[in-house]
Length: 446
Image (tube, rainbow, N blue to C red; front, side):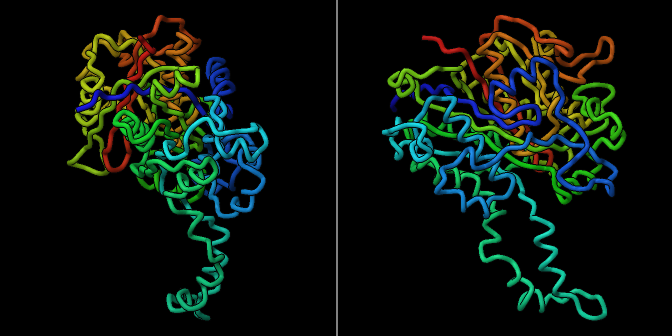
């Protein structure tokens, strides 16, 4: 059996409520900025929760060729975020793809063989445009006010555009990215809720390691700023309903003040590359992915395992895959949704594997600044972890002030912490379904 190829990270493209692009995001994170505020995407006044994490305004035309702009009509918000992140990641990696050539940003040729370029992207349950859907539904009521499914089948659906469904299929994130950048190698869509990004990155890592691709765009994106997306976690009582007047203090991972999560939008795509390919084109290398593990909570789809066994299982698998041990982890990146039961379960999982190290090892949690943006959260977390290794800096973790003597992790809540970092572990889990993914990254060593 041939040796596993080494896989490195050469590009980071993120879209977050505190900045688009890895440099703007990282600077804002170090400054301790919070991206949570009253929701502007729609009128939230009818909801108990009226806050969220929205992206800064952006124009999709800045991230695609002019010839592709008509396709924007069939891109839901989630798809647009993924396409923007793909462009940002490719630019950050110094790659030349069809997108950049057609935009006139490079004379070509492409710097990667398209048949060796893949895309693994995590997606959520994309919510329909309510105004568009309601207009069609409104034509199907009988005079007595009852809804007619017969009219919906014969007339109502014809009031939707023929390509309407293409805006909301989860695989369309990867579809548009593959078309725009001409990726012709392995392409997969992972739809495992909030765990999707970690699992997509892990699958891309595997594909390159076994030789099925040389380069992969991977990660995830999702927008939770939609009335339907807000309704679901509200019904599950997972949202903080007590912080509309102070959104900057609403999301408190692993804190005694934690009262639920705050929804958000965003995501990230990473450029993964075989070490040989990256070196051949003299690419800047952020870090090396050395381990991936996955597990699931098989006994319940709606509640966390209080002992954190799925988290522990994924972490153990990732450390084993990396051929490393818990005592060599220098940075911990917990998922931290600020839902008390889930935070407690996750902390138990980390402690089952790392013992007392989580409370002693520097840790970084992002949700206090960004909120929870579903399938895109994990990619932002992994990108944050990679930047921390690359810069030897642990960013501050907002709203993580622990109860005296009971800190599950060693966060730096107020300011960045300079530290010699060599190896880090990141975990992401699904709130419903119980899937967990874990990634171990390390500074590149010869």
